[in-house]
Length: 195
Image 1 (cartoon, rainbow, N blue to C red):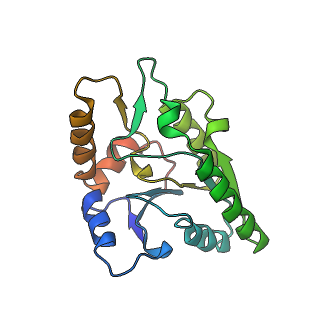
Image 2: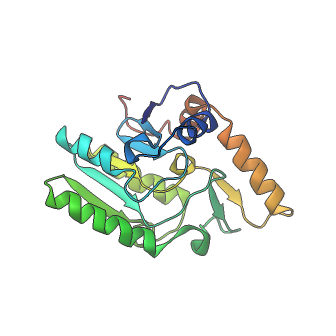
């Protein structure tokens, strides 16, 4: 399910709607579209981004699948130096799962490429992630952030906070209860227009 960037409902509303259904199909996973950028609202499955790649490739677009990591509604856990805590973010298994899916899609003639964020985001920062996304979008390509809660990829929280479990949950709830349009306005205004 594709959600427009100007949607007034919260991320939680869209996730609850998805999980309230009788079945979970890949095409039903809620994704927010901001220009050529697609981000997940909730948890994703192995092939939840496949329908997006198929649809957009048919429209003559190259689709970049950014992968190899986890996500949370609270955003990226960062240390005092502002870098991601790699053991909380990166996951080689996700990369290997998505490599198989990309190979299958390429074999079917889909114009899709994979970007390994562990390798490419070598600075391990939100700013570098934004630059990687922006570079692909500026070239006219489509980017799918293929991990759970990727809508919150531009959010950060300090992993060293006291009472971090309570604070982490409060941050996640606050983010999840924010409207899609507010999240996009506050975190994704840099995405090339038109939207």
